[in-house]
Image (tube, rainbow, N blue to C red; front, side):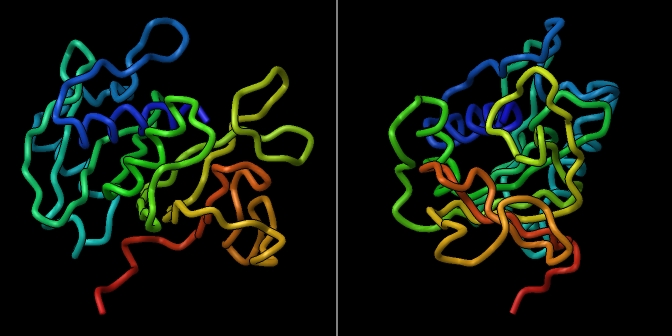
Length: 203
């Protein structure tokens, strides 16, 4: 769930137009400062951020990058309502994400500990390089717990909407079908689809 907190801050930033400092991992490192990220040129970091989404989304998306102080700043204006960031977690392997305004509202509710998400339409986000989540005793956790295992996710996209496993008949953890409900049974349950965004084409 730590990665969603980072995403939340980026999303709130996107909606408010302000700058914020992204919280860091244990040890004082800043999120978004994935190993070697700051050693890349701005152009290279932009490419990493845009690599999260299908080409038809990425070409018109905005980009925000973390500076040396950990604050996200807009470096490329978008025209399609999507914002891309080069990482949402402080891991050696970059895990960029592109997301729309509805996802921004969804994660704003999460970070501000609201009872439920505020988006009134489904939100879409893409993670073509995959992401991470915590698992323990065969269950996907919303937060890190003692004894939990960090699991690397394959390329995927997400739909932030109050789906449930009971209504959709989808499983609640990764499975061969590639589709499942994350955080089932909570107001923040959402659809995970293990489908590579790079292979998605605009209709």
